[in-house]
Length: 462
Image (cartoon, rainbow, N blue to C red; front, side, top):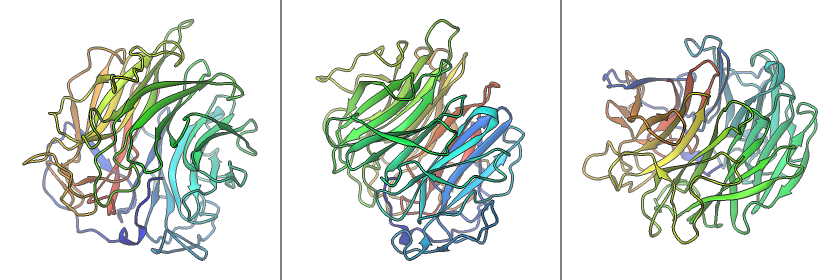
């Protein structure tokens, strides 16, 4: 969770506009139309597609068990048996053609819920994890559904009372559940071998100092598990070091490699802790056995001195993450392959990657559509951070011959922070891309007027 001021984030936006937008790939809004939706997760299971995100407005919905959730508060993220958010969930059984009504899987137990994650386990079991509480470090819970998200199990705290931040969720083909998280400069991975009923937590030393947030995770086709981490100092002003941890035995043993490093991000008024800082995501391209799957990372990193707008980089490993095609160089970084074709000075962030056996696809956000320069002068003042869009590139091998860039846009803007040119500000620091195993990819993100809100969750199929 990168922190925001909940009290300022509860305005209701203007009516949707009717200005037509040029779209390379159409994107569409999820949710119930009330806004205040950010930091979404997406996962696919054949033709089923699922989306989950925190909703920061009061709601009359009951959860899937029929319970009435605790009251909503706009003060401090929720106090005195109140919440500042509810998890919203939607599903599609026809590859994103149509979507179910919004539901709340389970009511918040401890308070505000954030940092949504989802994964598919054995027998099509759908898992979700998220933070649940009103503090910097909170219980991190896991819940699951065996009926495509209609009903959900009682949430279980994976930290066993230890609390944490920034959960990343993996589930293997045997319903072994792995959750990575951070607490006070210490990194942890909790594992369940009974389908999420109970968890055992262990500390893993990823970064020698500072804070390292789990920012991505993936399982390869041979059962190897990987978590990607972004390490920075306690101020959240960089530099950022990017790590990958790998295990083939539920993290009983593991190895860690340093992928790259980036300079500190620009400091922008109104943004949360490390909001514009570096972040790394990780994906897999399946290979024919006995070869290893290709592990691909994408990340945004700054070059040169602190405060330079960040750009998008990529590296890959054919050795289970033990080594990378471009080795980390402590004297010269970042040294990955640049993916964005935007001019120098454009602000970049929020990348994501996914692959199948024939193609790898990457998405990110940047503000190249801005006029009169690319400066982001404020994250809290509407219209002061340029004009943003989501872009996509693909490659047959995740390493060479990257395609031209494709923009994702809404056919008709829903809100007054969206125009044919783009949107005002990234809303939350999560984007995700997944492959459904049938040749389709889905991307999900949130667009808003500023870091403080309001905003909406959008998705594309490509």
